[in-house]
Length: 112
Image 1 (cartoon, rainbow, N blue to C red):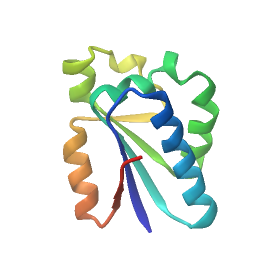
Image 2: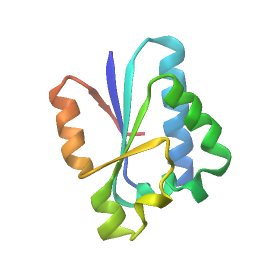
Image 3: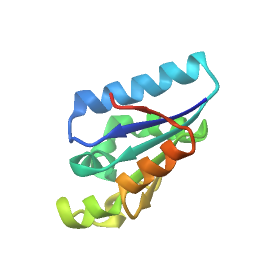
């Protein structure tokens, strides 16, 4: 099973739901999981913002979850530097392109 989770708003309850959904999925099924953050959601993945969620993100990365952060949103929408994003995340050129690519590869799309 392959799943891509999409988050695009800077909303802590949605972020918590996202993390919970991924944890629940991996408890029940073996899956390849990716997260694509674009729009204002990229703010949630800064080193300063992760705070109490950093350990959860690290645990998920250790289980193979990949967190993709949209560079277009960083540079054009929220003006956050690449160095401000957690090293646990991978910065990609465009979140919408990554979403389309993953769906072409058979990833199920989930938006918490």
